[in-house]
Length: 470
Ligand SMILES: Cc1cc2nc3c(=O)[nH]c(=O)nc-3n(C[C@H](O)[C@H](O)[C@H](O)COP(=O)(O)OP(=O)(O)OC[C@H]3O[C@@H](n4cnc5c(N)ncnc54)[C@H](O)[C@@H]3O)c2cc1C
Image (cartoon, rainbow, N blue to C red; front, top):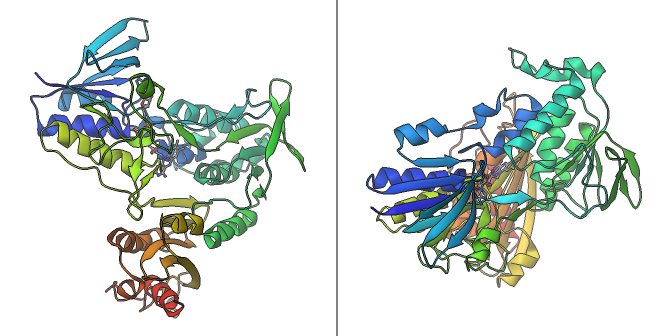
């Protein structure tokens, strides 16, 4: 019997395991997961902490029982893989009872994900300093919010938020990092009545989005009383075992809890020890089938690189769809149908209170020039629906293209929540992926009706405006 072994039981690992078993029921599929959760949606954690999602179990898409009983996957939870030996084609795992299990493989997938970065800040090891990378991190943060606001408040059967308990709120909290987790957590905490202070090292938040989008979200955070400190490198978290203040070169802000959201690093140690090569991004290098330099050893998800649709070069954008897509492709490959994982456009979306923002492709001019383009950018501000229609709000579209060819390189949109920035970005993903020009994009036959947009959808207008400036 051919055996497919998977290390890591979340998006990439479980997508691969399920697909392989479905396509080839004769395959033996063994998954080792060191933790107690599989197939969970870490993406939902900020909304669980906020109180919009009632239980951690709600974040699980397929339960361990379903994997074992319905999908016939041999799932070994609480098993930490400590060694891969490509010579003997074995992996060694240690169980929670400290027992060693040696498992042979014909095909192996490394889907070990990424770990939240803990920067070398003095005082970061104290109590009430959290990161948000795992289900247990999410549980701890929710418990903190619950304790601070009064036990049981988040269990309201009507799903209501906790703001009614504000009088019991303990005090200000700090967030280090203005990426998407920092912004989502600013919402989760502020909507529960916490006074939120967000510290960002650079001169803008959400820096993978357009400058215009960063500025709009910054303004919106201020409207929601989130204090954002730009160009503020955190030097120290002061306290005597329990964090008391965030200290930068300019400020000392008293806080009772700190969330550190300064990015992730791919978990590659296990792979490296087995002779698997990393790429320039620091994540595991693979070919288009997601196979590493070691024969029959694949890597996918947050531990691995992908290729960018625009440049064709390796890139590292650790997001959920990539993990699912690449895992699924590997499952298909090991089941007997070689399948490429596909490139990525770096498409991402964030909700910030009553705003939504999306991005895709290349927006950064330095990155575009490095790839041989002559980038130019324009932002238009318009309305999300027909002017005479009673609802709707401002909508902003930023497009970046190559001046010489007119090729659309990337785009970023903002709107009020529910007003279509994210859904509109999908047209841009198509344009970026297919190498479409501004002239072609402005000719797209997009749907129109007054409750949804203007006759010329803002995406079409943005393409026309930028083409006019070439
Ligand atoms: C708070 C938060 C919000 C997010 N929001 C979004 C979002 O809105 N949109 C989006 O696209 N993405 C989002 N993401 C990212 C998304 O969750 C990841 O891209 C996705 O989970 C990656 O899946 P993965 O399988 O590669 O890795 P992971 O989900 O990290 O899973 C890896 C698994 O491997 C296990 N493992 C590691 N080493 C070993 C070992 N040696 N032995 C056994 N098991 C091991 C780990 O325990 C873990 O369960 C978010 C992430 C977080 C933390």
